[in-house]
Length: 266
Image 1 (tube, rainbow, N blue to C red):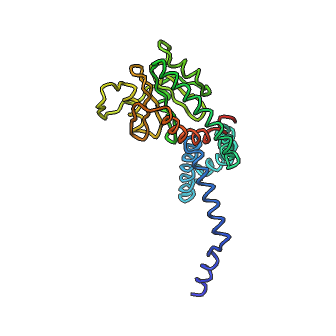
Image 2: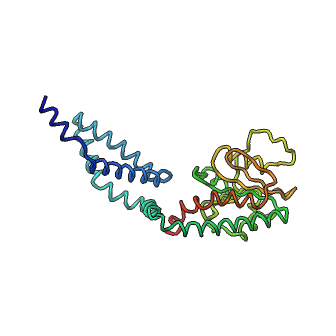
Image 3: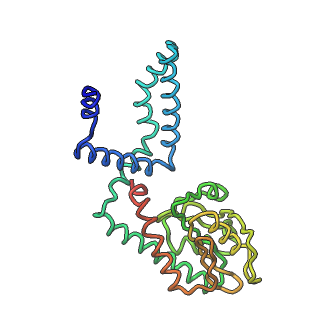
């Protein structure tokens, strides 16, 4: 009995061990957040599968499979560093987003907000139909693939040009990620919710449809009424004043810009 108690005493953690466990858990959690939307997550799942196969090969004494996997593991780490270099670089850049950089994130976010507000105001004055999507935590890659890929910095001039009538991309939506325009001419899902206001057209149905399926913020400018509408969290606000648009943008844009600012600069 004493021997058993002594074994438990050996594995009993002290305060230093608990602190170390918490730090390691936090680092692992942060790492998973960084790679959850990258190819690296698929690699981790694949490595986990191979590790399971290797474990069973050792138990069942499958010498050939065990030898092949041991050789693969020896050189696989080097190959992974080469193949996933862009993801690793982006992850390291995002780790640098500490409190010291928040002031720069706010400045960058404020520039994006001002450019968006100026674009929306001009589109409204000229009664130019538009639908602008700001990606948040939920990735919109599947929708972005339906349009034309772009890598342009957010600016009033580019947004107004995209939605100019008769331009090739004016009928679709624009998706903005951080401080960049990711895609234009994008097709969005239409809501199945009945809209009682008959003046609301396809753009409004598409904006609400995306807001129901994601946490994106969607801004719509009506070409018939020049009204500005905003869809967010499954709700559609029609006839929104510019001040209200600014309020919503300032609540979303700084966080979104901060999450990708280091990655876009790397």
